[in-house]
Each structure stands twice: as C-alpha cells, then as structure tokens.
Amino acid sequence: MSAPQAAGQGRLRRAADAALTRLGPQAQYRVRRLHVRLRWRWRWLVHRGDPPVVELPGGRWRRPLLVVALGADDTALGETASAAAAHRPQAIVVTDSDAFDLLRREGLLFESVPSRADWEAAAGGRYEAFLAGRLAEIAELYRPSRTVRLRPGQTLDPPGDG
Amino acid sequence: MSGDRVLICTTNGTGMGHLTRGMAIGRRLPEGLAAVLFTLSQAAPVARRQGFLTEYFHAAGTAGTSKPDWNLAYRRRLESLLATYDPAVVLFDGVHPYLGLLDVATSSAHRHRRFVWSRRGLWQPGKGGQAIDRGRFFDVVLEPGDVAEAADRGLSAERRDEAVVVDPITLLDADELLDRDAARDALGLDRDATWALVQLGTGALADPASRLGIAAAALSAIGVRLAFVESTIARQRTALPPGATGIEVYPLARYLKAFDLAVTAAGYNIVHEVCVAALPTILSPIATSHLDDQVARARYLEAEGMARCWQEPTRAAFEAHLARLATPERRAAVAGRLAAAAFPNGAGQAAHLLAGLAGAVR
Image (cartoon, rainbow over all chains, first blue to last red):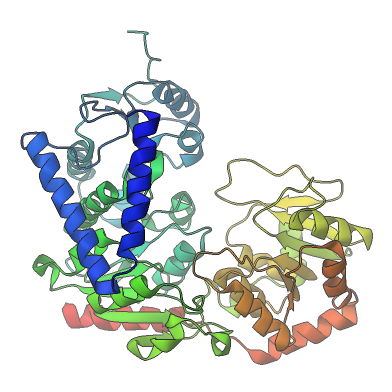
C-alpha cells in the first residue's frame, strides 16, 4: 500500500471512529462486531475459503514466512531474529524462549509457546500433541507461504543465502 | 482435570499492573484449583519465572496488524486455550474487554464457564463509557478496591453497585515483605545511608528538565542515595549517575522496606505497594494515563497525610515536597499514618470468589 493510500485509510478510520462515538455504548459494540464479521466474510471470499485470520502489512497476497525456533539458546535466537527481521515478506518467529527482548528489538511479530518443562509441570499432558495443535493454530492465523523448522542451535539463514 | 483451572487473562497496559494483579489472585487460589495466565504483556517471562503456566499473545497493533484482525486472532487463541485447559472460570483483568473476548464469553459453547471482569476503580471522570457497559457480558464484575476510593468521581464509582468490591489487591501481604536490613542486604545497599527509590517510568536521567532529572538532582543535593528501578520489560538500561544503583528485582514490593523514601508514579499497584510497606512517597501522577485517575489518587493520599503529590514539573515544586519528607522525623510521621491505616489485601477475597464460582461449575 502506498503512503497516500495509507494516509487516506487512516483518515477514513478516524472519521468512522468519530462517527461511532456519537452512538451509545451498545450500538458502538454492535457496529464494531459487525465490522469484524463482515471483514472476515469478505476476506473468506477473496481468499476463496482459505484466508489468513491476520493479514499482515504489505499486501493481500504476500503471505509470511513462519520460523519455528524451539529450544534455541539466546545466541541462536538473536541471530535468527536478525535474519528474520530482514526477511521479505515478513517473517513470524515461534519461540519457547523467554528472551522476548531479542525478538522485540528487531520489531518482529512472534508467537510464544510454553516450553516443554513448563507445560509438562503445570498441565501434565502430552507436550507433542499440545505443540502440534498450537503450530496448526498459528498456521491458520497467518497462512504462511512456507514454514522453516530450526533444530536447537540452528539459525535462520539471512535472506538471499539460499 | 476438567474445570480445575482458572484462566486469568490480562491486558498489556503501560506497566505490569494487570499481570501482577492476576498473579496476586492466582497464587491465592485454593489447592486443587490452578491458575493459567494468558497475557498480552511483554512481561510474560516474569510470570513464568514466578512459577505460573503463562501463555502470551501479542497486543493489538503489533507489527502493523489491524484491530479487527487482532480481535479475530485473539478470539481464536482464547478458544484454543479454553479447549486446552478447560477452565471453569475465566477472569479478565483490564479496563477494556475486547470484542474477541466478549464473543467467546457470550458463546453458547462456553455457557458452562463463568466469566469475570476485574476492573479496578478510579476511572477518570467522563471516560470509559463504552468499556464499562461491557460489564453486562460477564457473570461477575469484580472491583479491586482503591485506597483513594473516596476520591473516585468516574464511571467506576457510578456503577460500583454492579460490582463485587474487594479490598485493594497487592501481590504480597505485609508479612511477606523483608525488613529493612534484610532488604538492604539482599539489594546490596549500604545499611547506613539514606536511600530513595526512584521509579518514574518516563523521562531521561540526563535531562535536567525531566521529572526523573529533577528528582535525581534534588535528592542527590541533600545527600540521599538513589536506587533506580530498571523496568523488567524495558529494552535499554538506564545510564546511572555516580553513587546510584540500578535495581532489577521482582517482586519489588518484597524489598520496599529497604528505602527511606520513594519517588514514583501514582499507578494502582505501586501506590498500594508503598502503602502496605508504609513507605513515605512523593507521587508523580501521570495525567495522560489512559483511564486511571492517578491525579485523584495522589491528591487524596496527600490530603490524608500519607504521601506527597508532585504535579508541577519544576525543581522548586519537587523540593517543596521533598522538604516535607527530608528528615527522619517527618518520614516517621508519614510512615506511622500509613502503618496505622492497615491495608488488608483483597487478593485472597478475589481468589475465594473465583473458587466459589469454579465450585459451582464443577
């Protein structure tokens, strides 16, 4: 989307918000809810029944790269974050690390899953099944063009390195 | 394991207030009922280190995602968590329940669960009309009390009869705080110096016109040593002046008795924590806070002789407040009033309420 287009959309959104504030709280809620649902229907049609829930900036058909980096230490995660930040279309990192800062400083969108140790201690079920379900859910949210699964210690190659 | 959990959902906010309140309640749930935290806060790892099973989801607007998309995604994630953990009760702590959350709360698929909205009071007058009306989508509205409840002029006061009000909620009870010497030893602070805790959140230390710069210069000028709180979610560390120290501990409340005085913002959590610790404090309310009426809270405490309210961002104004806390005798008088007030912790009451709801469901 070009800058003038984005500015135009911003103006439209502000005008719609201003109009909404004239309605009562319940009417505001209904309108916003309807907006979300209609938007979803429209996207469902446009994507022929296979839409991402979250459409990332950069255009309707530019699906992201999903990078699954489980068991990564801080060094590997930091390097992966740097490479992911340079990726176009956008990359989304799935991590079980608590080092959110490494991902935030690159401005990355990321998904966090509890680590095996945390999950098994608290939930007591099969982690593999939980993780498979979560990864499927994440794929449904973003509909990535490609998924890269990194082994512990392995890092994402920078764009252009093959 | 069906129904033996409470899912505590917290918003991101500007600090850790919502997440800390969620943990305060979660750690007091009775045996057999476990908390799972679901937060939008970047401080999710802090909750994990406190032993909570913690799920994280990015806040609206992250990396350019739109709000309608975010609500759809939030709903999907929440549905997935309900399927995974099957909680009997879902508690949302935040000032604005999301559309994605309300969609789930009103879904017939979840009618066997109880949905509770925890909204602290002291909303700024005239604000939050759209948010407060969303209380009708919940089974129970829970209001953590506020020491400055008498100063509440917002919608939260007008609609208080819709809520179950508990005492103010803090993570720790008074008897969980370290005493002065133990806290100083734990933080590595000189036992004999006069220490001020500084937690203002915004402003640059090097900028003499910023609140942080003003407070640091004025305190240093009278020989008070400075301990700066490093945010657990900040990206960069503060460059400290000579003689000052940086503190990065959680929960900070456990160590508050280490200090002789404090200079902090006037948010819900820190104010109630300094009250419980009986710590004389100069409060610097953030007037631009989204909904929280920090100015009303700070003014109320000043009127009660329990804190100072520093509004005008000048050194002269700060020094006038500091003069009222400059001597050990004056600080002792304020600490005495705080200690006499006694602040029961409402976290246990809130946990009891959730346990009752869960028991009714199971």
